[in-house]
Image (cartoon, rainbow, N blue to C red):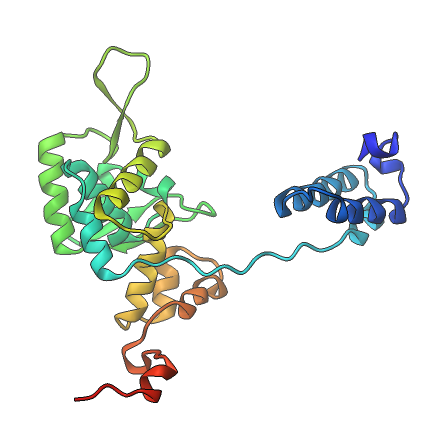
Length: 257
């Protein structure tokens, strides 16, 4: 914008800024929505730092795309959990799906956070720096005990390799890239065609709990959401047994018995 007008954006009038934003949207080879959004966000930041609140308020509002989360079926989850050859990777996937934790949260799990007697996992300092408890099922507890006995982690449940030091494992957190790799490879081995990421298992955790009859307030607490509205998006993707959606073709051409 500074190059376009040959002056600082803070020296421009509101109509000049509007003209430039219109130019961005209309010119040939239109930039991506992300580029346009970050242009507006950058201007807001500059105006805020300079105390030009009137200029900041006059900028266009950015509407966030309302995309529904991708959710795996239970059969797809079964295939995913069986796909990895390494026990460590199967347990990692089991914790991501069975506890609904985020990528950063699963990397932060320490052995001291596992309470097998109470069948609970303490998720420390999740999003918003909040702690929460999530349940551990018996099957996952058995898998965790087998994994811990075999791998013998010291502090973090899932250890990662240390770069730069000769060959051994240090008691360091599993890397974010490592967690993403495990999910990507399992997806490939399981033959799942849906676009998915580590976070897809969290979406699936929430959706399956709601489908199985757990109330939305409890699901909100398990996910660590601050607002119930954030959790309510899963109501758009779940399939409730008492009101299963169907196609009008099914009643137009009813199946012959």
